[in-house]
Length: 218
Image (tube, rainbow, N blue to C red):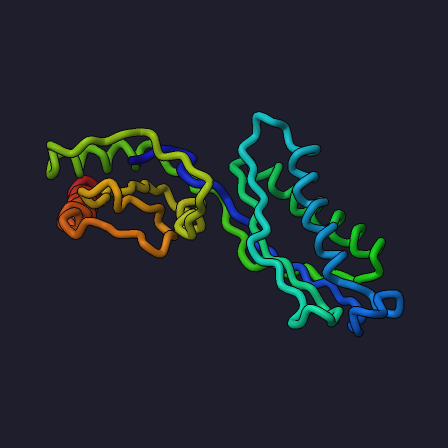
């Protein structure tokens, strides 16, 4: 599979809300950061649904919500971690600004000062058409029975985008599903399995591109 833009950019963030802990029987003398965290999470989801055009491909997920260690204790802090993904760089920059504005605004309402940290900031994976076409030729000559599908476009992210944003690049994925369809799971699933039989194909593709490019650009 190949395509461009192949993968979305990703902005990873950590939000720490500072409250005032105490006993659960006396919330009035505490400042509950969990309550603030719940409202921050909801506000971030509404940011996407109300401020992003429906035609844009954007996803915001809070995958970690941590606060408290006991059922009857209000903690001092609550931590949220998540990712924002999209293909429009200008829109992503705008949303990063809005995330900070929304978080700080909600946090102020609930008297929980917020700290926002950047965990990752990777651009969309945009490839060079000339390099892609040349690579298709190199690999196709070595693996003539392989199918090449221009269908690669997903909301995942890839650090290689930091390289492709500076140097003309190509990017391909090799299908490596196991034969048993009951064993098909997504990449991050704990039961994910891959067919070792495809490893030689990947090695051959890398070699073909390297030797082909060198031969054409001596």
